[in-house]
Amino acid sequence: MTQSAALPGNADLYLHVRVLIGIILGLSVTRLVSGIAALVQHPKRYQIWPVHLGWVAWALVNVVTFWWWEFRLSLIPHWTFVLYFFVCVYASMYFFLGALLFPQDLEEYKGYQDYFLSRRRWFFGFAALTEALDVVDSWIKGEAHLQSLGVEYLLAVVAFVLMCGIAATTRNLRFHLLFVIGAILYEISFFVRHYGTLN
Image (cartoon, rainbow, N blue to C red; front, side, top):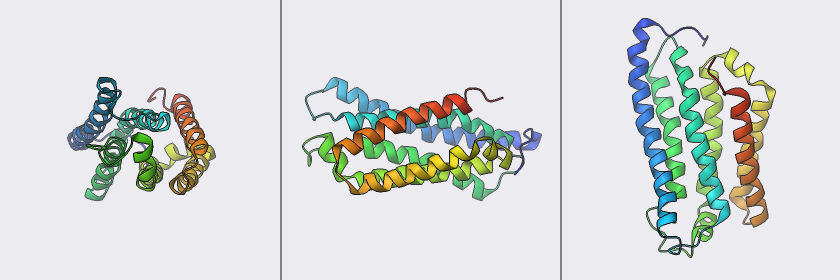
């Protein structure tokens, strides 16, 4: 698909899609922020784990940046149900990540470390899938857009997916700490370098 100005007849349809994306991502942000607020309100209720908080920060950064760069969907001249369905599924991944990071209760677990490690396969599976869907999303915005991200982008996605595979199978605390620190720093760096403006 080529990048071009949004067609007049396409503007209303894009607005319709954007509203739905906003609702889904709004629920994602609400889940994450509410979870953080609960930790502040009841810091002694459950044992906090820095790695878990790191992935909460990573998820928040991803949701906020996703919301920003999805504006480029306005450049898509023709919408289909398949494309609409894909965007909805992609946006929903962030809600799933938020729900996995902050479950309704932790009664069965000793704290967030115990919970997170016991559900790491689910979390990192969704995280890896989200990154893979991002490649499709970037391609949808046009081959020129995908190429503008450079080879680094594809290599970073592959590396992240592989790291998620390792994280899903290991309980090594040092690995999990280094992984989340690296993921946050790279996400921020990539966004600043490629999406600081929408020009």
